[in-house]
Image (cartoon, rainbow, N blue to C red):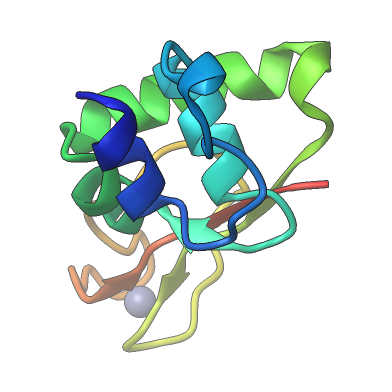
Length: 111
Ligand SMILES: [Zn+2]
C-alpha cells in the first residue's frame, strides 16, 4: 500500500492528502473512512483491499481505543424475517429465528 492507494480510497478528502501522511496506519485509514459515514465491513474490506476478518479485528481495536472517537454499530438484520441481531463487531452467518442466511450486515461509524 502507498500514499496513492490511500488517496484513491479516501473519498471524504479529510485526511491522507500529502507526503507527510504517507505512513498512516491501516486502522487510521479505516477510521478516516467511517468518520461520520456508516459503512459495512465488506465495503471497507473492498476499498482497502484487505480481508474482512482483519477489518473486523481493526474495528474491535478502534472501538477500544479512545483516540478515534466513539464507534457506533448499527446491528445486523435478517432480511427475511426482520430479526435484529445484537450490535456487535462481527458478521452473523445465519438468523437464529428463521435460519435464513440472507443477512443485512452491521454498519460501523465513528463519531
Ligand atoms: Zn430471520
